[in-house]
Length: 405
Image (tube, rainbow, N blue to C red; front, top):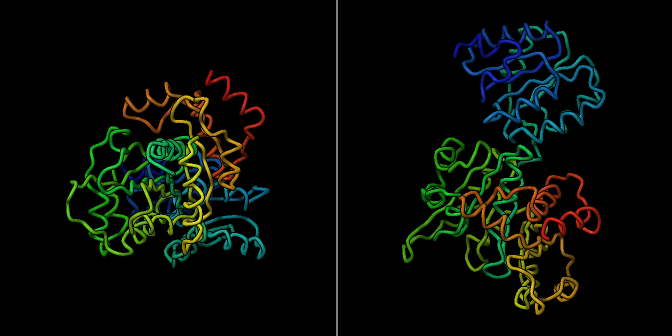
C-alpha cells in the first residue's frame, strides 16, 4: 500500500494499524500534517479531517493503537473529558499530542496532568510539527493511568474462577475495546487453553526464563491471540518438570505488560507459591470467587486477610458464583456475608446451558450477553471500567431472573 493511500482523506478503513495517526479539524492543519508525514517518509500513517470522536471510532476498529497520535480539540466544549474518553481506547504506551486554537495556560496544565505529551496552538507550520513530534516523547496519555492489574482467585477448586476471569477479560476486549493480556499463573496448565481452543506454547515459562529480555517486541511474539485485543500468556509444563520462576520475574513481566495493555488479568490458582504471591502483590484489584458452600465461607476470610496484607495493598472484592444448580442445603447469601464479614460485590447466577455451550465451542469467554451469566459479566465489567453499574435489586435482578428461568 502506498503512502499516499494511507494519508488520503476519508480512508478510515484503509489500514487497521498505523504508527502515526492524526485527526485534525481543518484542511490547513491537515495539509501541514501531510507535509510532515511526507517529509519524514513515514511508512504507516493515517491523516484525516475529524474530531476526537472520529479518532475514537477509528481506534475501536484498529488492531493496534499507533505509537503517536495527534488530535484536534478545536470546538470541544469539554476537551479534558473528551481526552479522557480517548484514553479509554488508547493503549497506555501511546504518545498523544493535542492541537487547538486556545492559548490557555490553565488548559495546557490540565492536559499535561492528564498525560498529554504536548499541546500546540494553531496555526501550525511544518517546523512546529517537527520540533514537537520529534522531541522528547517520554510522557503518555496514560501517565499515572497505566494498565490495571486484576486478579481472580477462588476459595476452593471448581468455583468457576477461570470461566469468570476469561469472560470478563474478553468482554473488556470485545465490547469495551480495551486491550487485555490474560495470564494463567498455573504453570502446570490451567483450563484456559481448552476453554479457548488454543494450543499452549509455554509462553509464560519462556517469558519468566528470559526476564532480562522482556520488551514489547519479545512479548508480541510470545503472547497467544484470541481476537485483535485479547492475548493469553500461559504454560503447560510437564508434571514433575524442574522449573523455578526467578524471584520478581512475574512482577517484572506484569510491569512491561502494563505499558501496552489496558488490563492485565491474572488467573491465580492458589496462594501457596511464590509466583502466586507476586501476582497478588502486583494487583490493583483482586476478586475472591466463592460458592454457596461452608468451605468457601470458612476459607474466604483467610484469603481476604492474606490479600490485604500484601505490599501493594490491592482492593479485594467478594464474588459469589453459582457453578451448579441451587440446592436446599447450600449456604444462603445473607448467611455467607455474615460469616465472611463482607458484602457480596456481585452474585453470578447459574446458567449452565450458556456457559457449557461456550466452553464446548472453545470460546468460553464469549458467553452470550443475552444470558443471565452474560448480564452478570456486563455488570462486573462495568464496575471495573467505572461505568454506571445497575443495582441487582432492581431492573437487573428482574432481568437475571427472567433469563435463568
